[in-house]
Image 1 (cartoon, rainbow, N blue to C red):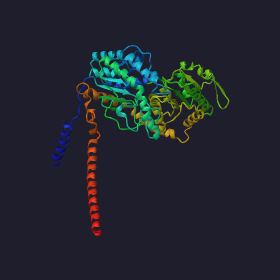
Image 2 (image 1 turned 60 degrees about the horizontal axis):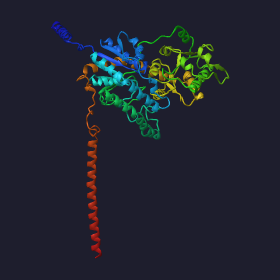
Image 3 (image 1 turned 90 degrees about the vertical axis):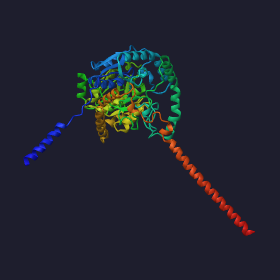
Image 4 (image 1 turned 180 degrees about the vertical axis):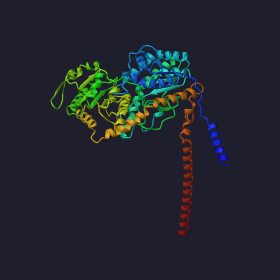
Length: 548
C-alpha cells in the first residue's frame, strides 16, 4: 500500500512537470526606424543612437538622418546604424545663435529662429519625405528642433517619437513648474509672489509676443508645402516625448501618458586618457576639471575671476592641479588679461599658462576626454556650465560640481543640483572673486562630508537609471507593434481627449451642485424672510390692537 502511495505521488509530480508551459512571445518582424537630429551637436545625438544601437541589435533596420556637419557623430555606431545625410547645413544661422546668454527671448534669438526655418525647412521636409517614402519607414524618432521631420512623418501617417533633453512639452507642465523661458529655479517653491506674478503676467506675454513671428514663419512654410498646423509638443499630439532625464534632475510632477523619462543615458564607450594625461592624473591627488561645453565660453571678466580663484585655491593647497578645456580660438580673445595677480602678490603670465611653460600642474587643453577625466579617482571637482550631458557624466562618476550656468536649461539644472547637495552655483554676472574661491575650497575640502554622502546617493541613482536605453528600446518596440491605423498610439491616449472641458474638469457637475446649493439657500432665505415678515406683521397688528 505504501508503494502504491509513493507511486501515485511520483506520478502526480511527473504530470505537473510535464504539463508546465513556458510563455512564448510572437516573432515580431524587424522594422525600419529613422532617428534624426540636425542641431545641438553630440549631446542631442549620442544618447538616441545608443538606443538605436539596442534596436539594431534586436534586428531592426536603424538609420541616423542628419546633415553633413553631424555625420561624424554617427561613425561610432557603424555598422549597427547607417548614417543618411540630407546635405550641407544651408543656413547662415548656427545652433548657438538660437541662444542668448543674457536674454533667452531676445530679438536676436527670435530672428535666428525665423531665418533658420525659412532657410532649411523646405529642403529638409522634401528630404525627409523622400527618405521615409522610399524605405518603408515604420517609425520616425525626431529631435525637438527637427520640425520638418515631424511634419513629413505626420503627412505620411508615420508614428512619431520626439527626443528631447528637458521637460518642454505641454504634458510635462504643472502650475508649480516654471516655464523654460524664465531664468532661475525650476519650480515656484522659493519664488516670491512678486517674482511669480512677473514671470506669469509680464515675462510670459513678452515671450509670446517675441515668438509670435516665429510661429507665423512656421505657418507660412507649412502652407507652402501643404502641411497642416501641428504641435508635436502638445498634450494630445499623438507623439511620445522621450526625455533623457530623470527624477532627481527634473523636478517631480504629474505628467501625461505620452511622456517617458529614459535617462540619463550614458554612452557605451568614451575616449580614454592619452598617456601623458593619464600620467598627470595618476601623479596628482586633487585635480579640478573645467569645461563649458561646445557653445559657451566665459567672457573676459568671468575668465579673470575663475582663473584667479583657481590660482588662489592652488596656492592654498586645496587643489594640486587643474585641467581647463579652453579652445585655441577662445585664447585669441584680444581682451583676455595678460597677467593674473593673486592675493599673495604672485603674478602669472596668462600666455605662459596657456602653453604650459609656467607650471606643469596647471593645464589648458584645446580638447580633453571629459568622461575619462571625470572617471579618474583623482578628479575631485568639475566646474561646468551645467549642460545636461556634462552633469550626467559628472554624477555617474561621483564628481561634485561648481556650476556656472549661462542659459537654456543650465540655470534650472544648477539650482536642482545645488538643492540635491551635490553642487554649488556661481552667479556669472556678479564677478565675485571671494565667493568663487570660497566655493571651490568648500567643495574640495568637504569638511563635514556632506558632498561625499549626497554624491554617493546621487551616483547610485544615476548609474541605475543609466540602464534606461533598454527601457527606451522596449517602449519604441511597443509603439512599432501596437499602433493602429499606421500611426495611432491609441493605448496612451487620455480619456479626456475630445471630451468637453467642463466634463473633463467635472465643472459641469460642480456648477450644477453650486446651483442646487444656491437654489436651496435662496428658498430657505425666502421662506425665512416671509416668516419674519409675517411675524413682524402679526406683532405690529397685535400692538395696534392693544393700543386701540
